[in-house]
Length: 276
Image (spheres, rainbow, N blue to C red):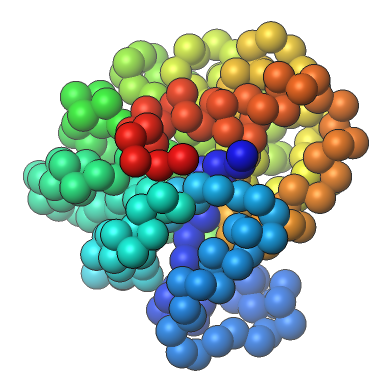
């Protein structure tokens, strides 16, 4: 059993956005222009024995709507045993954002994700703080991106220190899942995850063979074994490609199980109930 904690079913709006020009470069420029059936995403998961995927919505400033909460809710409703929803919100409207988060969690969404580079606002910006309090109150994780940006936007907002470290100090009860491993600041990300009990790392945007050595070493420690979760960043990386080379990491059987699904089920507590 495998749980993918960072993936999205791509809409044409998502794939065509100019910020993702790097994605078009990686894939040879061939981008679909029509809606992609959800079965395409399920087939990628099935090929790698990924049983559950956390589908994220994407929203940015000035009405930028790349994958809506409503679209995610529809895909989850159609396949409730395969998907769980990760909500997005409008940071520029803090009270609307809190209400939207509460509404979506009431509907079954399991987390909130905000991608700082999309907003050009680090997680210490005051607009995040009402959402952090709501996440704690609702018992759902805050998911975010750390490290440099593949998309053509500045990377500064992805630094684990000071941003993730300071948020964890201000909100020690807030569960944070930090995607994309933090490269080139992976050592900082590992240090922050080791320091704060509720800070976790997911491996999205990196294939198994490209995981930084310092992260793999952390996964083999008693602390790190419980701190790292599998994520693919599908459709940028297919599931089979993301997991290729897993046996070569040298993880114990328990560490492998924790990485692939155990940690995800402990962190995203609402995955329980109706899902495999």
